Length: 308
Image (cartoon, rainbow, N blue to C red; front, side, top):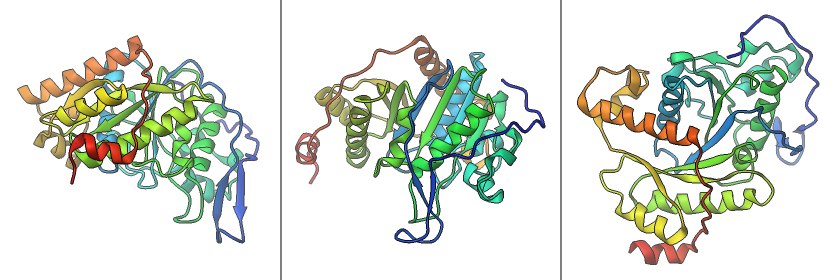
């Protein structure tokens, strides 16, 4: 991983920023999408799924698994809650939007250590944050975060980049990480609401894949003793289950202890989960075939899964 120094390279002020003083309210931040460049040679993954499904836990432990395989990993949290990297850094780190506001959006004044933090086993951590509530677009922060990382040359020596993204895809701003990713992975549980959200994510990925390189990589079942409902949906739309993590108390406790699963006290059930993360990381690193999936109409999901 690139060594952090006190050097402050000049950074051109981004032209994607626009503070709206009228219609959207004081402090509104809007995004003007720019052409997207490849993030160095890194393999880039975007993790999506229903809010509260365990994306941050999944992303953080997958990041550690990649690092255990000897890869240089950067995890980028893309949620205003900014707790994606909590178990890696053991604290709530300042967000990109926080530090930009602290210098009145003069990004040339920022140093690497102002927004990048080293977590467990060398995983580098960034929290993008979000615009003021109700006043702007999440895509702005994602774009500015990537811009800062590139201009500080932090992506040149990175093997894996993981975007951990806000729950449901409700607007184009939160779909912005798909512009940078090679593969999008969907975290879901074996229940109707999670699968309903997954269907919307499938549609968002299909829309982005028309103009960008991102493709569906597969599905990760989380907190799931069974996968029958997930399997039924996957078969209907063309998805594939890549990994399954059960609803274990040790996973809940790891969050409370500010720890990744790889730091918890050993047990046979924990070792099985660790091995599943290592297997998933190895499979993703080796490369996965892109999946061609077609989202379903809402009514068809109700009919398929027998929800009433």
